Length: 502
Image (tube, rainbow, N blue to C red; front, side, top):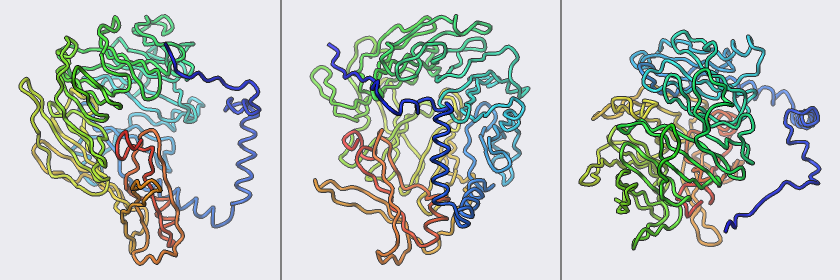
């Protein structure tokens, strides 16, 4: 029996016309409300603050985030001269210098002007291995829906008669030079949530509407999707059916469709790499005579699991104030990213037929915010090199490279957005009415007497963790420099302490 609640939009909603976000009435209403706000707050000081903030956001010393595709590092960069942005590339050797030699691949400002479109960047996915072609996603005005167009990375031009898909929510994944796996809400392939309902195999030169459907979900579900795993001996296709936001059903198969269902609860997060399957349940999960707790990370051979094996290696067990933020594979090493009492920690494991052994990682910072990941965009490519970003509320982001067996080496650091002289960052806890300890980070004058004006921000939802990252241009320049104090709270509903906290 399906006991899920059903929801319908009220047929007497007096504001339903606002759903037409580009309609004349909705746009006129938004313009009128914006005019009221500007009339209330506009002043010489306000305009000066806007100019200051714009200059800081466009400063040349910002940290350029990069990822490697083949032999190049790619970056998307926007500033005052290029407000829509440049997709550009350079070599790792050049990026190590103070003035990298950037080659522009796609100028979005020039493209928007030439085509008379309000294009914004929604990403580019290059063909794995060769990285000679890309499926570029272009959004009109920042919409969730985007147009997909094939792009030649050598000629730096869109491919005439190449893969092209009209505006819709969804994505396309490369299978080979002439084949895409398409999960898109175009042409009526849409769920009630507005996302893709089908997965299709789209061959070069074929009308996408005629492309073969190899997987689909019910219209009332949230979405269907698919991805390609090239880390195994034979490339496989993973199919995903999401009934709801936090629930997923998974199948493994090939271009003909799903072959084997992955027998895990819909509330679990699961991923495969080579022959290794990882499962993290969100609720207690009983398998045979053993019950696994929420947020435990379990590892097993994928082939053995599909054949009926249910004995897992437990790789991570949550604590009351500890959460597994995520994981990634670096070659044959699994790296776990953990928040322990709001402090960053990383564990590594190497699997084999005889079990999982603890791996080695270089000495990493244990304060502030630390993120590490592969330098290479594709799981199966690369030489084991990692990138690390580190920051705290008063220290701008630093990008470091970690080569195999080496300590982190600094590549770049973002220029400061504000003067942090005389400021301190401290971490505290407030005790809620039910005794729960609620963490918060306070940034302000070192001699704070408690009389400074306070700006407090909090968010608790979607398992998102708020970490003590760099305070940034707006709050730093326009608030902290003027004597204010900033407080960021980690309220329940986020992901800071795992499912219990969410």
